[in-house]
Image 1 (cartoon, one colour):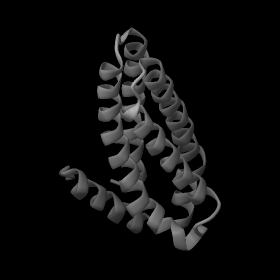
Image 2 (image 1 turned 180 degrees about the vertical axis):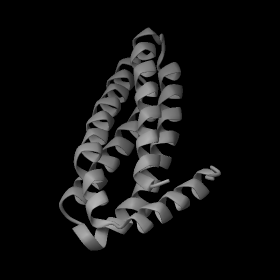
Image 3 (image 1 turned 45 degrees about the horizontal axis):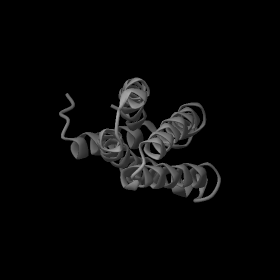
Image 4 (image 1 turned 90 degrees about the horizontal axis):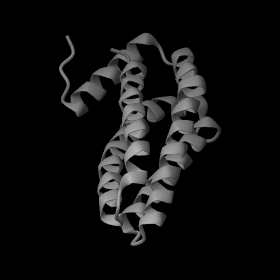
Length: 147
């Protein structure tokens, strides 16, 4: 499995989680309930971002350089992480809602950029063997068995 396919699969799971959160957030009655949702999302998105940074982005750096699209992707990872930290620390339910809603919006936009721009670039500049090797590393880090 190529790493692009693995990351796209993760995006699909996140889209479902975002849809669930968009329904659950307005119904949550207190900040603690929303912070709990933010903590779960933070763990999942953080793990996803780390794998992108350490596997795909690191492989693309020699081809694309640290600026340009990779700089934007890393900046957005930091923005998402910062908003999630803020959501977990906020006391007011409305502030937590606002931050978590922002995370979902930024993450969706970020995924769209990856899917429309970065992943096609990766398919152009990285050979199939590299993409497969990165996919195997992704599987190992995720504890997934590929056959």
